[in-house]
Structure formats: structure tokens, C-alpha cells
Image (cartoon, rainbow, N blue to C red; front, top):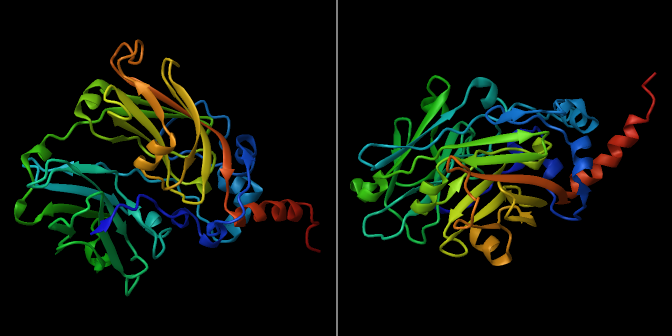
Length: 363
């Protein structure tokens, strides 16, 4: 089992990973500049409204250049929820891999589940976990025809888990877990985890149902609504929003997180997550009534503990008036104000594209 890694590479969504591999020489771009040069439609699973920008990646010079390099602008596929068995001893996840999606995945490209939590026997605290699947193998796989499967957790101890992918079951993850051809059935993969000998505590059967919605406006603003926020706050468990994207696929998946009881028992902390380690984004988060708002720089791959220490979150006093809507829901709005750090390769690419646009056609 691996410790939590919490990040996916940008290479999963476009044809050449070299264009975003460098981490040196950051450059600041305004949100408007990013919107003009890096425009991308929102993922299909996110509810959209009032779009003023509807061009796909290939509709810009940058998009056309990346397509020439082999980029693929396929829409993001919805990540299925984790389903707990009735006895609470198994957690299952379905990964949809239709042929058109599978064709865009390369060796080393991961697909991650949403985080979930279970209780192990003899432990008083829950373990947060996330499936990490490499359909065509991770960097240590011996053959791209093999799947790699791991369970990333925040546990400091090794847990006696059993991972299952289709009909193959192992005691823990493996780079050569099984052959993709053998695991794939009707365009999907079935993944599950249980503790050896069924040693899951009864507390894990009480899975809190999250009722939420996400609206994306003009590829610049996101509004996240937690309909049962009061119940979620009392449950005290971390809740993640559906992933979304601001401006363009190159900025990667982003999502919001709701952490009850932080930094004080009567508060909740709202985090802005970006999985790209080379990115720093200036974002503004605001609670629905506007009583609580904050602008800060979100850092890719930062942990919740680091964000709390550095103040990179929106604190909301849940006892304050007007925090909850009349139906008991909590609204959080997010806006991207500035791309603070961008990979050097992408920074250097933009002026070359502008120069090429002015060249005459070949004779």
C-alpha cells in the first residue's frame, strides 16, 4: 500500500507530456490572458450555464499547436462514486473505459477515485483512502498490457487489505496487477477493497450520503452547493466536490473540499485543490451570504495540514447567522483570479505560437 499521493499528472489529457513537464521559471498570467489563450469547455458531468466561451481546445492557436503535437481534447469522464456493501466490509468502484477514452490513456496515466473513509478493527479513527488505477500500467509495470492498482491512504500503519480488480485479487497493490484485456468487461473495470478476514469495524456501515451540485459559469466561476451541509458538519468527515476545470484542460482538474471542525470546533475549512504540482493559483472563495470570503494562493498537491498551517483556506463559522440557506444548504463560490505559476515549457510556447501565426503560408 502506498501513502496518499493526491495528484494526477497532466499527461492524462493530452498527447505530449513534455509541454508541461518543467517546473522552473514561473510566470504570472492574468485570468483574462489564460481565458484567451487556454480556453476549454467544461467537463460534461458538471452542470453548466450562461457560457460566453464555447470553443474547444483546437479553437485557439495554442490548442491547434497542441493538437498538431498529438493532443486529444476528449471531454472529462464522470468519476463514479464509491459504493459500500450493506455489511460495510467492502468498498467498490466502477471505472468506465469506453474505447474512445481508453485510446487517450497512455502508460503511466492514472485514474483516481474520489476519497472515501472506513474504520479498521482496533482503530478509533477513520482511514481516508483513494483508489489509484493505471489502466496501462505505472512506471514500474513490466508491460503496458498490465493494469496497476494501488490504494492510497493517510494511515501511518500498513493495513491488511485485499484489493480486487475484476476476477483478480491480491493482498495489496501491484504494478503488474492483472492484464487489462482480462479485467475489461463491457467497457468498464470493477475495483474493490476489503480488509483481510473481513475486519472492518461496524462504524464504516454508516456512510454519510452527500447531496451536492456544482455550477460552472463562463469557465471562470464555480458555485458548489451542499444541500445537507448541517448533517455533513455534524458527521465531521471531509467532503469533496465533483472535479471541474477553469479555462483549459492544461490547468488540470480542480475541486473544493469541506472539512468540518477546522480550524475550530464550530468552524469548517473550505479548501481549493489543484493536482498539478507546478501550478500556483490565486483564488477567491466566498460563502453564500458573503459574510466570509478570502483570497489566497492555492498550491498544487498541498496537503490539508499544510494548507491549514499556511492559511490557504476559507474559514466559515457555522454558528454565524445566514451561513445556511433557507433549505439548510451551504453555498461556496470560487473564482480564479490569477495563474501565479505556469510551467516554463508552456510559457515559452506561447510567444512561438504568436510568431508562427504571423508567418505567410507555404508556397
